[in-house]
Structures are given as C-alpha cells and as structure tokens.
Length: 147
Image (tube, rainbow, N blue to C red; front, side, top):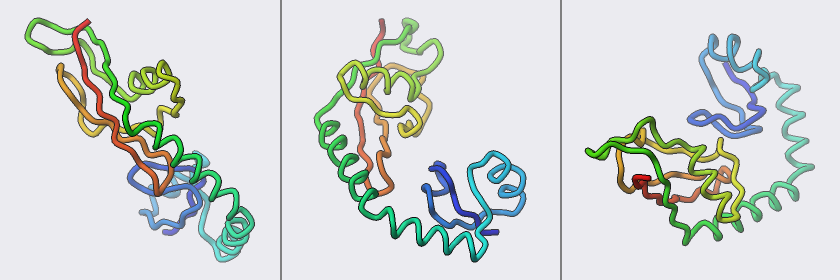
C-alpha cells in the first residue's frame, strides 16, 4: 500500500514522500491519525504540483537547517542526573533533557527531531542525532554526570 506522508515519521520517511507500508499499518494507524493519506493518482499529481510551487520555500528551510547545524558543530552538552554510587542513573536521559540543555545555550530545536540511539541509563559520554532536515543531520555529543 502506498501512502503520502503528511509529517516526518522516524524510520519511515519525511513529509511529502510517497512510501510503501503494510496495509494494516496504513489503514489502522497512519491514515486515522492524520499522519498520511492514500497515494491515489490524483493525490500524487496534487503533491507534485504543490512541491513544484513550494520549491523556493523548501530551499529556504534547508538553508535555515544548515545554519542551525553550523551552530551545533562545536556544541558539547553536560547533563546532570541523579545517580547511585555505582554510576547507574535513577530513570534515564531522554531527548527532552538534550533539547532543554540546547535551549539553555540559546539553540531551539524541537525535541521530536532529536534521537538517542540507545537508552542512557549510566553516567558517561553519549551522542544524540538531530535531524533538522531530510538532508541535514548533526551529531550532538553529550556527557551525563552525577548531580
């Protein structure tokens, strides 16, 4: 089943892409949640026309994402967390804490665009990936220290 995505979905695709999904996933989740629409021939024609008309806006969005990526190049974060004597964190560090630390440094990024590969449950150094645009992503190193 082919659908046109209406928003970015991690591990599936980006907004305004035509992707193939299993029928149940499309009918039962993506379409009812408003995350996608059916990829009918008329919908694909409308999408192509909209993309053609918005081409200059998309270039500006990409340029803005590259500017934010340039700001993020030298950034290193330190996140404090309550931890045991053995170095285990009570809870875990998530993309929300990374976004808050970036906001403290004056860089506003939507928390939904920040991905941490593995669960952060111990003190140490880790990397998060900020996907600012479908062609622009930046690794953000951060260190988790005991409060």
